Image (cartoon, rainbow, N blue to C red; front, top):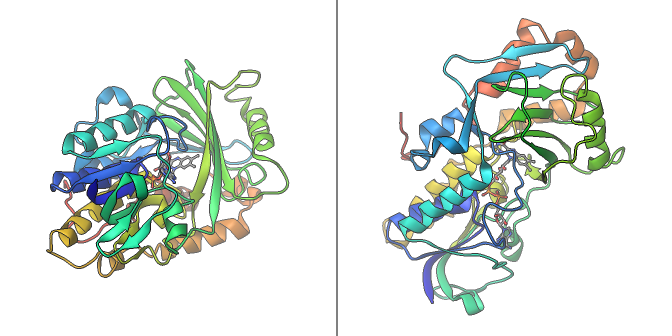
Amino acid sequence: MTYDCVIVGASFAGLSCATALAKLGLRTLVLEKKRDVGEKLHTTGIIVKDAIDQIPLLDNLPPELVRRIEGVRMYAPNFRYVDLAAPGYYFLATNTPDVLRWLAEKAIEAGATIQHQTTFQDAKRIQSGFDLGEIGTTRYLIGADGPRSRVASVFGLGQSQHFLQGLEHEYADWKLELPDRLHCFIDRRIAPGYLAWVLSGVGMVQVGFARRHNQRQMTTAQAMNQLLEKIAPIFDFRGHEPTAVRSGLIPCGGVVKPTAANRVMLVGDAAGMVSPLTAGGIHTALKHGLAAGHAVADFLNGKGEDPCQGFTKSYPSFRTKRWLRFLFDHFQSDVMFNLLIGTRMMRNAASVIYFHRKGVFDPQGEKSKS
Ligand SMILES: Cc1cc2nc3c(=O)[nH]c(=O)nc-3n(C[C@H](O)[C@H](O)[C@H](O)COP(=O)(O)OP(=O)(O)OC[C@H]3O[C@@H](n4cnc5c(N)ncnc54)[C@H](O)[C@@H]3O)c2cc1C
């Protein structure tokens, strides 16, 4: 079988890319190692309002798959807290497995094929593109295969070196007080370099944290136990078995170099397209996947250059966010957060991080709803 484009990875980046390509009439195949796109999740699945506003693919996202979260309650290490909200701004907690299944249906409706239980191992360059053995040949290859991209390693593309490690427990049928808040906890011991959180999701409560990768003082399991102990005075999950566990790496060093070479490119987490500060990557993966799909379709239809040339120049540098990440990594102080939590300065800084829009991948010419 001969394809115009083979995409490795059927998650946010791969499915949005496949939908864009297939809608433009290209023969598109998505390879996914899992049996079902909604199993073994590596994400909390919060979608920011900007994604809903800007990404037409999310129009008609079924309301039963999401819950509105109106703001953030941020707790200092000593539990003093501040409530943050921005007029008109919200996050969506999601039934993430079903959101991914819904995105997969969109890609299939557009004409893409998804081949599950197929792990990409290797491909050979041929004159017309790539030979993937039994799978067939393709004119273009896209790696949407997450932070440890096999496509990147086979073709010598850039790979992320800096990660946060996330771990999350799901507790089914729990009810939280203040369910319309994302409860965030700062604690340098448990979550160095990031935060812990409690979220009233869709049909369950999610309790998790992320921290700099390769922490030696405590395993992630020990850190989770400490988190559950710590937050017990507010939310007591001790002694309850989680109904599911999510974990994974979040690239936080910015866009990898190079992200593309002749007829092969990386999108989403594989490309390091994640905000180094907030570690949010769903919005960027969806936008990047769609834009890459359009750029590759133009190239294959003879209307543009290989996206490995011009398109990748529109990528964000994340310079400020990488600088802020460096500061947070090196100078995070529980004492400082305890002292400053209620101040106008801290409130303003936190509001900018949670609610502002800059630094998200936004290539020129990309369709926007607003
Ligand atoms: C614990 C945690 C919590 C997070 N929470 C949030 C959040 O709330 N909001 C947010 O915006 N971001 C969050 N992120 C980040 C976000 O999940 C990612 O940025 C996003 O999932 C990236 O999507 P992607 O499609 O690029 O890659 P991924 O979601 O990583 O998908 C990669 C896909 O490729 C498949 N694959 C991998 N290798 C192969 C192979 N060799 N062959 C075939 N298939 C392969 C995988 O099975 C997977 O389906 C979180 C991350 C973690 C780890």
